[in-house]
Length: 252
Image (tube, rainbow, N blue to C red; front, side, top):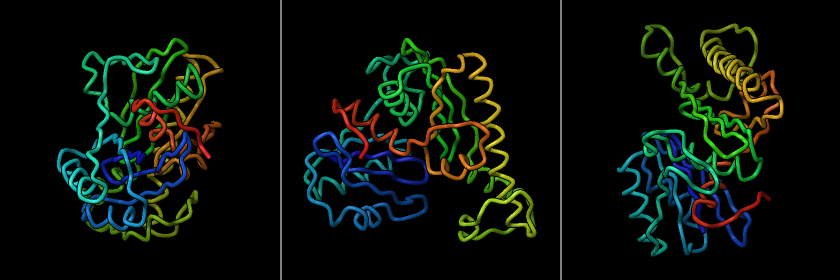
């Protein structure tokens, strides 16, 4: 079974077999040919019997993905939808569908694997923070711009700042000797400071036994700056997708 987490910028995927994730990978799809990148990533895989998807990238991406899987695997994907209650977790939103399905899947997996209270920080195009308490009740969340979104905003509103894709491979430092480095370091420090403050307030409210979990594409870099001991769980959303599909997976 193919598990898919389709974000605004990138696709994360894994193949689940007999309760384990045996293959995994990711690719960027924003401003690219989704079908070509899917072919490059999955063309060499065995034909999948099932595909289960958490998609926040919109109907266009959904249509292309469905076309690709039907043509190559003769499988129509199952798209996860947010509900008021699932797998022991109760949604805090008065309109459940307004919650991002990736956040819902992450909460399901976090509560399933860690119990509660648990704080989930997902660092992607947006940084989201959600809390599930010891009874499985979602207590609400927060959404802030991620590092790439902050960089893009700065570039759009300034005249002389330019950045290339290579600037995303820099090593984080405190002080910078160039404008591109200064932007890169600045947005990461800004996001890390926000996360640390929010986590501190959550621990103060829900107690020191609150489990702190971080996932998402920027988690590795932001963890290196954090003053808190957050557990890095890169497959959190995918495991939530599997749970919502009626499967149970473990990390290998």
